[in-house]
Image 1 (cartoon, rainbow, N blue to C red):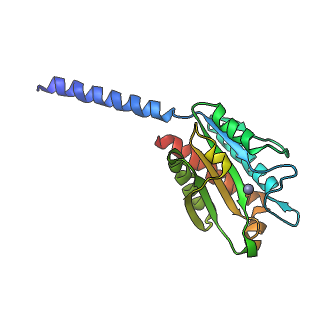
Image 2: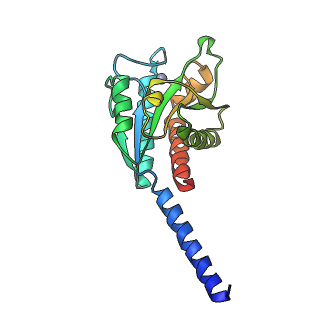
Image 3: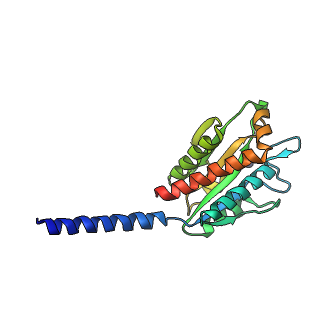
Length: 204
Ligand SMILES: [Zn+2]
């Protein structure tokens, strides 16, 4: 093989690789954001601190951050309304080239549970969960409860796209509850989720 043909082979290999990477980076352009609970379904609650409010505020912050990155964002709810679970997963399956991210806050009896965790159901959701969990922990310095497999309806029934459910801390934990009542903390949570999504997109 002469040098010229080797060079042209290397060139074609480079072009092929960049085409592959380029097309893989286009693997999704839409993020379906699902703020957990709503209306009469408060989710976890202690006193007047309701998960439904925290989740909606956090999801809205993530929405703004992702839009700045040029991503299309679909919210399953943008206000305090009740959305049945099957409507949420239907939204998760409605779009191609999309990912589905459900935002929740956690609860444990006795109030000792702490930290953040991210759930996936199908294998194709695992990497997205790992990215979000890693950035969430890095951004908030909260206890890392890890990436876990689970069968929550919204991630089990969203079959078309990678789907994850993020638990952003425990409403039942007095220390975490005090933090999550501050906008600064919810902004950090939102940054962690958004940065995880953007890093996942770049890694594809
Ligand atoms: Zn919840």
